[in-house]
Image 1: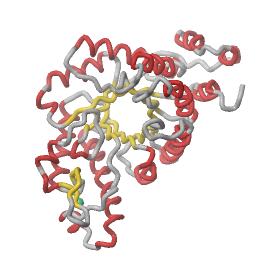
Image 2: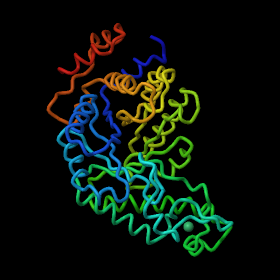
Image 3: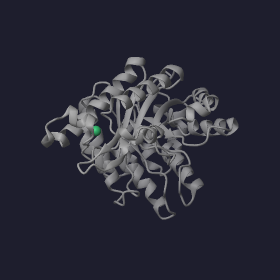
Image 4: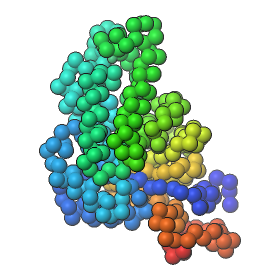
Length: 359
Ligand SMILES: [Zn+2]
């Protein structure tokens, strides 16, 4: 078998704890649809979902929101809540600007020319106080397993707002100050989560061009997981970059005792791009992350059904025994030589799945 065989990658993961997370960004209003979807996600081997909440949504449909969380829990899925576009500082599935930022124009980031940018400055005390209260509210009132920050906007603009100027009178240091401020802001946010409930997990997911933040992020004690969106197609790079980015994240997080989460791009794919799902997944697995993540029927695929079915097939290649690590009822069985041989002989990994399911 060649050194770079995907099967070797899969074998190397055997016996490790590997969680699967699926982002579920669908409307919450049809309970039967939720039930069907969550069962399908659970059957794919996932143990958790990412669900996004945008400002004001909870105020408008608290019953639906709670139902989503409870139904996910009933299906055996933990829920990581993503703060969609709060303050325009994070990504979110709905392209809807932050209501807070719209209502508080004085909180906007301001550049050296006095021009305002479309995001609230994270040094703004009023904003921080509002945001932390929101987080406290969600963690205290709803069954969420974790809080996730999706693609936080890195400090690409040096802020000259009155708050930043007051906090950093040395104008020549403003750029470094902005980066330090971002880390302090994130640290305070994750500490806020842990303060409300120390069991609640904290995650951040970066785009590859923000991986230069990883080392600083690993120094935040209240941050549990660092992820990366390995979106090779969206970023117009070769699929081989998936492995490179993946290794970078896994090495940095492992050295710091944090967990890693690598995301498969199973959206925005043309029929031609679909053929790259398999090498992307193999590259991702070869980095040996703690968690694999992807999307449930997410946007703009040429063949939505085919992409999800292919994604399911890839997820099912992860040996089933790992998927039940948390039950504690099953006795771990080491991989035998005959099972290994079977793995190598067959090109259809499903055989091993079926065997290991009954272990
Ligand atoms: Zn500022």
